[in-house]
Length: 104
Image (cartoon, helix red, strand yellow):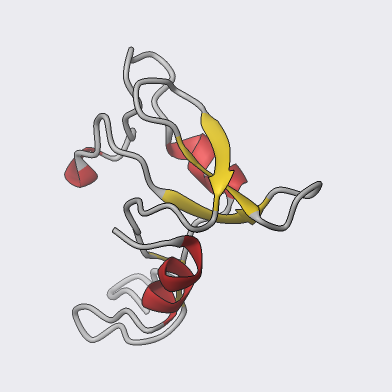
């Protein structure tokens, strides 16, 4: 769990499996696409993450208040905004390219 600023930093310095660059927090649009709206609680369509009922940050600051950012809301299939100082999960994202034989 991190506050929003630490979540941004943690994602940008994340590395796994030899992939050491281009990690980031998902933006609100990306997060909305991953929420499974057919469930009662917040969950992701991508089964390996298994994040049912979890709250997690997005990189999107609320346009009308720079002290607020969007995050997934526990128990609902939606995003909400909260103060950037609360602690919640940080999930690093990375865009991969498949060249036919390997991820880059």
